[in-house]
Image (cartoon, rainbow, N blue to C red; front, side, top):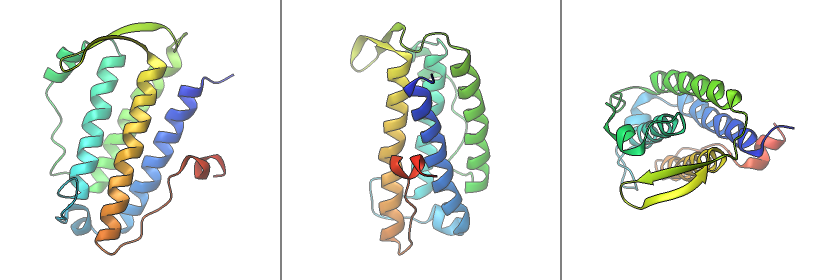
Length: 163
């Protein structure tokens, strides 16, 4: 039986791609357009999502959070949606390869964050954090698109179930 965290990661990938497909339909000027919101543009939200997904990949791969935070970040702010879609696709391949090699996603690990300290957690819980973080920011993007006068797309889990 597939672990629930793997199913939820697949949902995360599907939801991102569904939203990115909508952004690809719009012009890059919409993607980079400034708006008064939680982020100054959709591109800044997508950039943040990528950087966080990449950070957590380093962490689940065994790099300490402190060291992962020091890894040079790929420049994402100036990328267009086509380039970011490709970058997410490559990172998704890395995640899937790593997660599929794991024998026990529920094994307990110590997560040591600079701002909150040490906590025992599991790979599955870290994946769930990644999924919920993505859902939160896909909501930001949906609100921003509506604010700019554009429709978004549904990325609810139930939509994934019935795809």
